[in-house]
Amino acid sequence: MLKAAYRIAWKDMVGDLRRRSSLSSMLFFAIAVLVVFQAAFEPDRQAAVKLLPGLVWATVLFTSLMGLGRVFQAEEENGAFEGLLLASVPRGIIFLGKWLGNLFLTLLVQAMILPLTMILFNVDAWHVIHHIFGVLVLGILGLTGLGVLLAAMTQAARSRETLLALLLLPLVAPLLIAGVQATAGVMVADGQPWPWIKLLLIFDMVYLALAPWGFSWLVEE
Amino acid sequence: MNLLARIQRPLGFMALLWLGVGLWMVFNAPIDFQQGNSVRILYAHVTSAKMSLFSYILLTIASITYLVKKSETADIIAEAAAPVGAAFTAVTLASGSIWGKPMWGTWWAWDARLTSMLVLLIIFMGLMALRSSLEEPTKAARATAILAIIGAVDLPIIHYSVVWWRTLHQPPSFGGASGNPTITGDLLPPLLVMAIAFILMGAYLVVVKAREVAALRQLEALDIERMEEDD
Image 1 (spheres, rainbow over the protein chains, first blue to last red):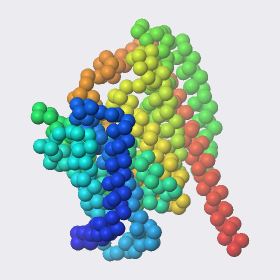
Image 2: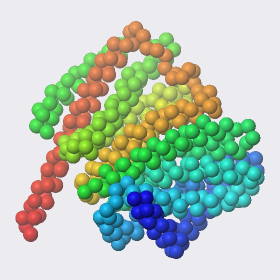
Image 3: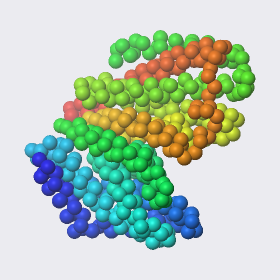
Image 4: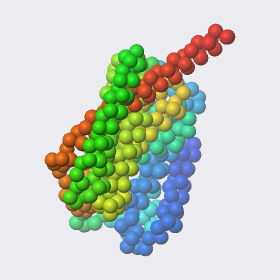
């Protein structure tokens, strides 16, 4: 069973890596967002340290929207989604595969965005970068879980990318709050990231439990 | 649907009656010691806040019923509850802002209840947008039902994360946890009457909207039937 999920995820990962279009467009979109933030806020060094958690999370959120908009694109274009649903595996497993594929892509992009943000904004937090990345991973688990479900919901809709953003952004508000606070918490020596990490974990568990179930209701014939 | 058609008019009359009596009581209630005349806004504000939550509860129950039983009536009620809930949420936010300006000195504060109300409004809008942008009716019904359930799970998380955020990082922006003094004595009866009036009004609006949705669906079905005959 899990093998099927792994196959679906593998297919998506290989596709993303070979085409490189989603990867590079997400990355350059992230850079564009960072340029916008720099131009909009013009932070000096001290302000940049305070801004960094928010900057990183806002960039993560916007770039992940781009990746999510494409999760079901290949299936949609070639009518392959019906084929996928005909496969004799539970719908939850199909969801798991699509989710893992998107998780991989998003994590890959964020792994590049985080050091890039720190370089472009002159923030010296290299000694805690693994902690920040850990917090990011926790947030991205839930973000992609909910995101892939919403992508499945909106894939047949008109103007689906706008709709996806409209639905996802308010629902992930707690994730954003917790992620930003936890990131700020791990960046200073006497910070208190734990309550926020707990909130991130709650969010992850709720959405990773809810999403496969919602997906199987959604695609039911 | 026949039942809805029969209760629509009596419900409307009742709502109007209670609303009239309620408003009369509101304008004859004594003014608040601290808040002066602006306390009267709260009679509409508190009641519509309750109604926006009621609408979401109705929407969630209807959505679950639709997913489990595949009953079209449940889906029609879910579709009808969304705009009614959105209207009550918008009234809550607007009246709260108007009350907040003289009382707190600001139109808006990012506290837990305001933030979750704002997100609730966006979710109502998202539900309507999702339904209208999906062509296939069953797909639209299923997707909105699932989204409604996700929203129902999300709203408490949003509420508590903002409470947490605020209590850990800055003291509440205004006196006490809520800023509302407890309501006593002469202010209570008009509030109760207004609450009943708003419940009746909400029920009336849902009935009207549900009948409209049902009629539109029938019309669409007739259109499809006629086109098939033409072929």
